[in-house]
Amino acid sequence: MGNTIKNILVWVVGGAMLLAAFNALSDKQEDKQQIEYSQFIQQVNSGEVSNVNIEGSVVSGYLIKGERTDKTAFYTNAPLDDNLVKTLLDNKVRVKVTPEENQACWPVCFTACCLFCC
Image 1 (spheres, rainbow, N blue to C red):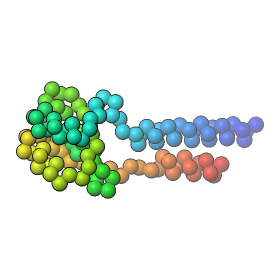
Image 2: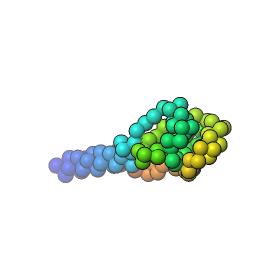
Image 3: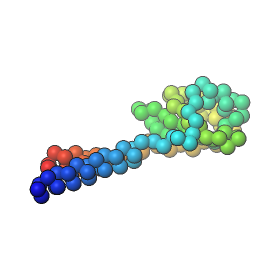
Image 4: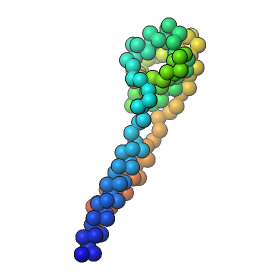
């Protein structure tokens, strides 16, 4: 009986850890509108974008999160574009660059160890 309770407890903890890891790794974009990159460039050129945050790297690609002059938020995925920063600065868009974050993998590793060891 004690072994069954232990197994159930391990599965519940493992499931909770997987759920926590998934929530921590998923990007929260529900309050922002996704737009196409071409639409983003059109909005920049027409003066509708006030600031952007460029995240990512050459290897994984870029995610651009921004705010329009009417305070609405948006995001888009960007290709490698040598003229992007110049276009943004020429149109008086405030630019912030955030390097790609290394996601912590310890919750997933811990859960896998618990499942395989028990």
